[in-house]
Structures are given as structure tokens and as C-alpha cells.
Amino acid sequence: MLDSVVNINGILTPGNRATVSVFDHGFLYGDGVYETLRSYNRKPFLLKQHFTRLRTSARRLLLQNLPSDRELESRILETIPTVHPTGEVTIRILVTRGVGELSYNPTACPTPTTIIITRPHHNPPDEVIRKGIKLIVASVVRNHPRSVDPSIKSNNLLNNILAMQEAFQLGAAEAILLNQRGELTECSQSNLFAVRNGVALTPPLKSGLLEGVTRNFLFEVGAQLGTQVRECVLTEEDFHSVDELFITSTTREIVPVVSVGNQVIGDGTPGPITSALLAKLREMAQAANSPIEESNSKL
Ligand code: PDD
Image (cartoon, rainbow, N blue to C red):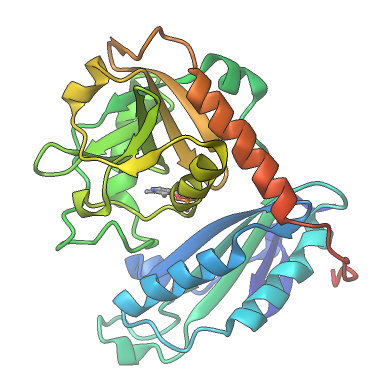
């Protein structure tokens, strides 16, 4: 079994032999978009939602000629049994501008490069879920929507990397980014939720952030659980008064947060609403995905 398997423009390759041209504009300029998915019961979860966001992101960059959803799905499904015989996988789809002259003119690259990287999936360790994580507020602010708009899931991730470097230096697991008005937006690789008086609150899209697929799913999870989940403008001041804090993402599901910098959140332990939402999310994800027929490995 392989650590990773990569489909490049339709050709399946072991991860350690997967390469792209140095003239690919994804490499030269970070000119491209991506999605990260995971499987439950070995079937990609919320595939349609990820495809929709991938196409929305691509449209924003005037990136054209992507493979169809059906073609992408078939490429993804082909990778799963090859990389992991039984367990869950994480799938990253990248679509870059493609290979062409060193030019910002999109006509230099008529054909995008489409890459699917599939790897075994690892949930956050149980201890992380039991104890919660520490965050910081980065000094780097989230891109202004009129710069590289955070609602585009682009391969151009330097802003997120700069924020996360601050977190690494301070021993934190994630970095919260503010917008230029001082409102909370999201973290470097996840969305942010706070719980106050039993209601889960998350910054609105107009604060300037990625519309997370898990964030959207949380509205459904909350409805099933009878817990209100809604958007609300939040600032650092709110850390003093919220009872719970958590992050969401495809690969991490829900992870409780117990402190931000020196500020302890609630009683400093993961809260009951966070735990209940996580349990319900897992239950709904398992129920939504029935096991799939596996195709034979092509490697
Ligand atoms: N990260 N915000 C940012 C900046 C992200 O990069 C991500 C996802 C999210 C959560 O989105 P979703 O629920 O759709 O995964 C929010 C993925 C996991 C990644 O970078 O691989």
C-alpha cells in the first residue's frame, strides 16, 4: 500500500513519483484552486458541495475547462482502494492554470492541470478532542475581500501560512485571523464558532472568510440536535463572555478550543454543546454515506 496516490490529468501515479512541470502556473504563481475532502465509510463526504465550491472558486479566477463533476468523481473513486485497503482517506483536488509561458495572461495556459492527491485519513487524536486546543490571534490580518478574496479557496496560501507560523512559534494549534475592522473571521485552516447561552455563533460571510463546507453542515447538525447555530459578528472582546469555542474543518470535524492566547475560554475544558455537536456531526456523516463498491486498483 502507498502513503499517497496522485491522479495527474487522469493518470494515476504513486505519490513519490508524482511531479508537475516547473512551468505550471500553480507552481510559478499559486494560480489555482483546491478542495480538501474526506471519506466516511470510504465514500467522499459532501462531494457535491465541494465540487460546487471548486467551480465557484475557479470561476472567480476565470479558470476554465475543468473536467466534469462525473469525471472528477470517477478519478477520485479510483484512488481510494489503491491508497488504503480498508480505512478512510483524505482527498485534495487541485486545479491550476496549467503549463505555459511566464505570463499573467490566462491565454498562456489553455488547459488547466488537475491533480487529485489521496492519502490515508487521520482524525485528530482522542486526547486533542478530550483536552481541547490552544489558539492565538495572529498579527497578520485576513486578506481583504477586494485583495485575494478569502471566499476563493485558492492555492495561494501565503497569508494563511504567515498566520500559522505565529501559532507554531507560540505553541498554538491554530491561528485566528481578524479582518481590517477587527472582527473575527476564521482560522488559517478552519472556521471558528463560539457558544454563548446555548447558541453556537460563527462570523458571517461578510466578515470575509471561506464558506466552509463543514461550517454549512453545522447549521444542519444544529437543527437536528435542537441547538441554534447562527451567524454573528464577533470580536476579541467576546472571548471574555463566551462559554465555549471550537473550530471546524473537513479533516478535523469539530475540535474544542480551551484558550486563546492568555484568555481561558469558559471553564478551560471542552464544553457540552461542542461535544454534542461533534457526536451529532459524526452520526449524520456516517448515516449519509453508505459503503461503496470498490473498483480494482490500477497501480
Ligand atoms: N481547510 N477556512 C480555511 C481558511 C480553510 O482552509 C478551511 C479548510 C476551512 C474549513 O473549510 P471546510 O469545512 O470546507 O473544510 C475554513 C482544508 C481542510 C485544508 O486547507 O486542507
